[in-house]
Amino acid sequence: MSQYTTGEVAKLCAVSVRTVQYYDARGVLSPTELSEGGRRLYSEDDVRKMRIICFLRGLGFSLNNISTLMQEENSQQVISLLMEEQEHALQQEIAQKQSMLDALKELQQGLTRIPNLSVESIGDVVHIMNSKKQLKKIRLTMVLSAIPLGILQWGSIILWIATGIWWPFVLYVALGIPYAAWISIYYFKRVDYICPQCHEVFHPTFKESFWANHTPSTRKLTCPKCGVKSFCVETAAEREKKAE
Image (cartoon, rainbow, N blue to C red; front, side, top):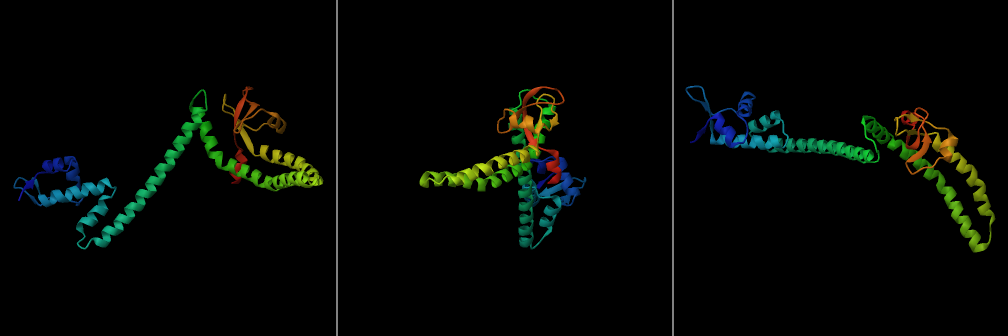
């Protein structure tokens, strides 16, 4: 029967000599015998076991679990249990890595919209990412509150066209004006803006916010810190984050 030294086992299994020695020290795989000079000698069966150990290590199994498997005589149930545990651990790790990847992609997308990148720019994007949930909640509240008024609007228009009855549309207008004022106050009280120049997070007056030129996610405002008027990025107010 062939016998292999530590170096030969390491070469056959594509690992380092130190790894073979470490597995021996941990009791995962001990040599079949020692030579007269004290050299570790491994059998072909040992090499086969080493390959199994390396494969399981590649799947993320701990040495303790591998040692349990190697020593278990009736290992079918143990193997199944450890496989399930390892699968669960790997799924959790994949989910965590995917979450990190999604956050990285979101950060990259946010940075592409910033002309002059800096460390402070990363802080701005992180601030926006952290407030996204609160902004969605605010906007969802606005949409849900507008549904009844929208039904009244289109219903009154259709009724006016079909039957000539116009007073429901007048009712819609009478309700729509105070609703528009309320929803504007509700929204602007709950959002802040980030200055792209000095990265200050500030809360403008209602009048300035209401009349400012804007895009879906920015509004042209004057920063109270640096005095520059530019399109500032919208974010949920800090008080909204604390209230969550």
